Image 1 (cartoon, rainbow, N blue to C red):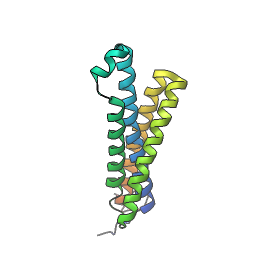
Image 2 (spheres, rainbow, N blue to C red; image 1 turned 120 degrees about the horizontal axis):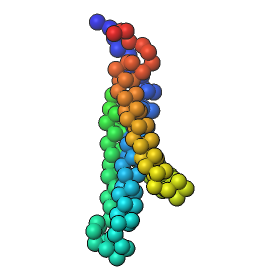
Image 3 (cartoon, one colour; image 1 turned 135 degrees about the vertical axis):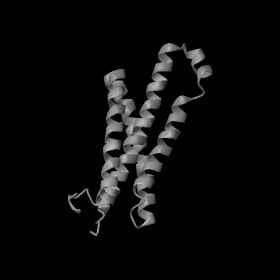
Image 4 (cartoon, rainbow, N blue to C red; image 1 turned 120 degrees about the vertical axis):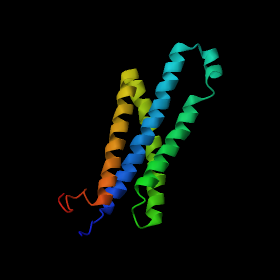
Length: 145
């Protein structure tokens, strides 16, 4: 039976990027929803149709970022590191959400869609990297099967 070596760097960075990417994608999705609602409803009826989807999406994005940052970093032996990764993932997701608003201003609706897709792809790939780091596959070491 082979001893599987964990790669703490891959776990930590993968967990951080996973939380940032998936949380940022959630915030970007909320911005897309708001943009669609504003385009279809007049400004007076917009607030009646949905309470505040941007705030709800922002809170959901923060929760997703913290959850994925914490959950993917659980294989680390130090609980403090997992907590810090979860907090940094939420801050990074807020930054990605802010940059999504900048992408919307500069590139319009297609840029916002592209930003959301890119965030989701990065978050998914980073999540897989963190899982591979836990299984000892991130560095190419392992049993070769």
